[in-house]
Length: 398
Image (tube, rainbow, N blue to C red):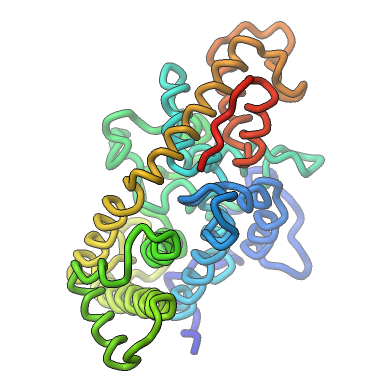
């Protein structure tokens, strides 16, 4: 049963609004409107043909960026409902969180980051912000989707503040600084990069972790990279498997795996919910702004679940993401993007007309960023087809 709306939930009637003022909808809240705009965007549809871990032609049943995104949204809505948060904003952030990912998953991100190293690098959160504020061209009065401040804030800060109060980059941005796409936009529309994001954004972030852990196990089992019994090396999954085997003796491997995935999702959702209640009871925030001023995330796993979840990530990193079969395909995928980037730099005329640098422009960084934006928007199969068009030999990615 859904909890009543909490005082610390984001209130659509008190949204900080949009950069470009629009008349309110007669039938939808501002956050529902944001969610609908994400769903109807071109970038969202392209997620259907972008790699999660396995490239699309390796099998029809593996996750794509789109199916992963939908699973994140389902988990996020369940958490938001239990905590009395705004489900529309939570769903918006869950559905938008991967819009900036390039083709071929994290391999594509590594390749573009290397290609753009001299021009600010590549960061998928910054690219998502570009997509929803600039690269989508669907409306007559503005570029992007003109999402509410709360949605933009959640896209950028769902993992925590990017800078401290003095302006120094923090966390993952401490070494290289805040990505240029975020820092530049923030000068135009202040997203308060020093503060935490809303609880809705924090829920979307932890839901991403839950979906990754559970469904990458599912895909790894389907691909034969490991077995259900291999997962007994971790205490949490070992206990779950033992209980499944007691309850369903002789169950086939496929159903054992599916039951394990269900148990794991339920455990992580319940753990996150109980820890959220504990932290909220201790912090006693009285508004969404009060949440932003807290010195910590309020949506997190308790210590035992956090340790177990880290163990799952470690297992998947070793047995799946760094598996020889996966690494070989991803190395070849990276090379496709390296080749395309170099070709477009050398022969800009190979770019579609709308992606060519402005007439008379002689700015190496602007050209490189336009090429990066074009490649980041590609689906796996478009990148492969484009490579086949421009080169004599293209890896089969198998």
